[in-house]
Length: 363
Image 1 (cartoon, rainbow, N blue to C red):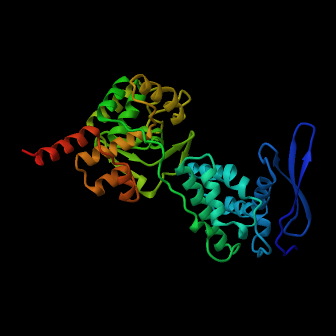
Image 2 (image 1 turned 90 degrees about the vertical axis):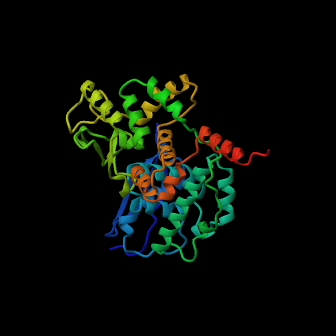
Image 3 (image 1 turned 180 degrees about the vertical axis):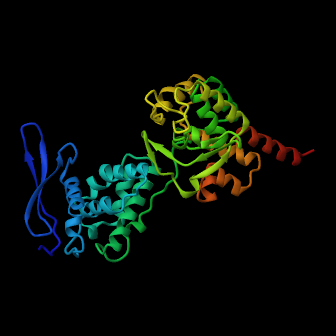
């Protein structure tokens, strides 16, 4: 039985139509094995192939202490195997950051050779928004923390010294109350009802497309938010606070009632906003094919479904909702997150400024 930690042997085999990465290794009983890792389209370079090999060898190396220098690719491989979040959307986002950014640049580098200033310089130069760069930096920090726990790295986490702002450089698209009214008035069903739920109840778009008719309690005028949809698949909710029972305003309830009478799928187990095949609607398609063209026709600008959630939070602030109420309606784990969604409306700011000027009027 093989007891030492192994990395296997990689090579690229050139076929008639494509190139394929292969891995030679010894199994838990010490027998020589060979496996296909993937073609050049899936694994475009050696760093990506090393990461895939490290992920594949995790069960073989289980319980065996790793010796010698550890590469970032090996760390990424184990992270994929053992630590990727279960939530589908988060898992996809992290996998994309690993494959597109972290592994191509750092995969072949030994962990001990990664320096904070080198990471800072790299982050400064890559073609990503500041928020996405901050996400890359945070994921790298998580990787090193995992490495310390797995005893793949000793000492401090070097990424803790890496400075990267998360401040947005692009101005966030916002909706005024008047723009929202115009937009809802221009949308046709079912997108009109979707916009009403988004603006008047603050649901995330995945929570809206995840609604089933059985989630609506018509007598108590409530909706139970208990699932999220990501790229057509049922996903976990974003946080434990996201599972919530929400009051439904009369206007929204009436719109839902009317839509149900016209919808092709009306059973309790069926989706409120379903495609022709009964599967939940794709949010990206609804945004690109319906929401944004209608918004553009009204000179509102390019917006997404999340703009409604910001509008909802801002109106909550204007009407004086208590912090705990706003937080629970939004489904946030912390009120500080809710505050980031709250913005002042231009007309309210002008009224406030005029009121101050009137009080300070010089005779």
